[in-house]
Image 1 (cartoon, one colour):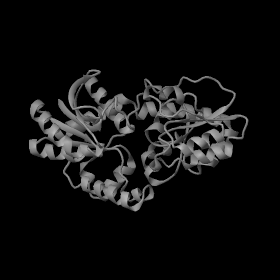
Image 2 (spheres, one colour; image 1 turned 180 degrees about the horizontal axis):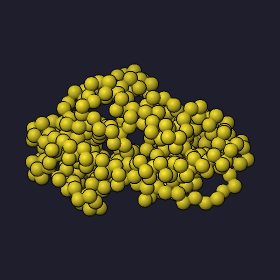
Image 3 (cartoon, helix red, strand yellow; image 1 turned 180 degrees about the vertical axis):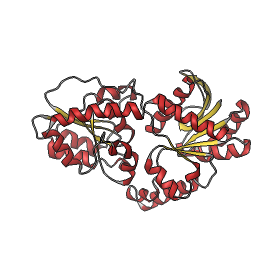
Image 4 (cartoon, helix red, strand yellow; image 1 turned 120 degrees about the vertical axis):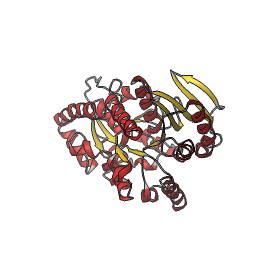
Length: 355
């Protein structure tokens, strides 16, 4: 099977979870014997390269990654004509429309991985002008034809079902590389509360992490660790409260930092990785976009959701609950989100649309 895989960025250019998902999936597919070629953007000149065994056609994104919606059309058409793939696998947001168009032109089925689906949630994160632009683009994207849409969480699945697209949907979660994200903990006299995120990103809704710092940083048995980029104002807040913070760190070092954290506050892929390393993980905000993403782990009690500060206080007062939740989380991730299992499910989607 030959797959043409596309995303606006691909490693080593990493902005967030989308790029990590793509690299994990491509490596997993190659390991299973799937012939994968990648078309992706970069901040350097357009070129073809073999990067760590992965064939990649790079498209220069200057001056904005949003231009991948246009620049990718030409490159996808060129590469598709050359390698004659069995299918095209795109990812939201900026490779979706070009892939759909080229799939139509070359009569190739197109699979779309949907990493997030905000709809009206945009208006809770940005000013009305930006929110309206993002909302319009998101709705426009799903006007284009896709043979199958892979939903990375239940929240996305439910929203797309509500739009009448249930016949084209598959639910296949974001994988976790459990060979890298695994417990490697050292005993510590203090309990460390932490998060790994882009702290400046308003869509992450990390208010509860900062509230936890204000409430619990005065305890003698509690430390805090913030891993990821932040604003100047947030840096001042960290310094004022004597919080350990790192700024942006290489993705390869994230497991090391997660193994320093006992109670993790957050959501999304970072929360799954935290669970995989044995953090007692608390959802930072119980809004539908987050509870939908983590529906399965919340339901099974492998992740806690509710009043974040009350949950954290209960864990601090009952350390045995931290240990119990830690073990449950590790087992849950291995059983449900390991890379090998997720790749097998993606291949099943491919086979379904090709047969």
